[in-house]
Length: 136
Image 1: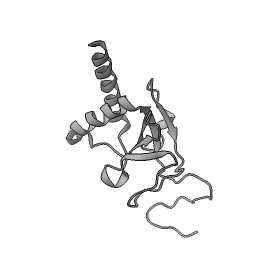
Image 2: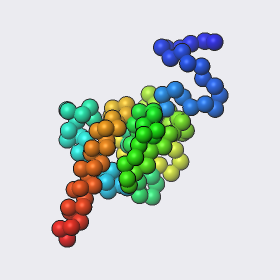
Image 3: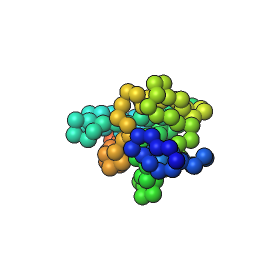
Image 4: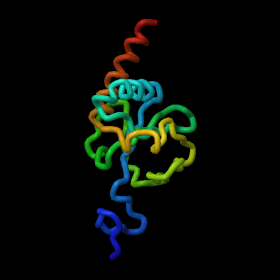
């Protein structure tokens, strides 16, 4: 078996890349608030990673480290394993899965968003949205 780089795990055709990120999806309004919250606190938290938007504009998807889906339990959001489907990283203008686009492309931001930072930002975003909606 030939090895490249420091990753010596075998790759089986059709298997997920070893470092395939998971994807946290949230409603767009909450996601946009969370992006702003994370960016304002970036010097403390490490910043926001790539963010996808769907074609209909209903949801945003945050790339998070692999394994996050195993323990994600934040109401109003979902976290799924991508298994690397439709995503290639480390390339300029990385392609997106059909019907989506990059809000924050991989080459412009951190590699992935820290799940703890994202969870806190989504919670704060939900509280801000609720407060704003209650002021009407």
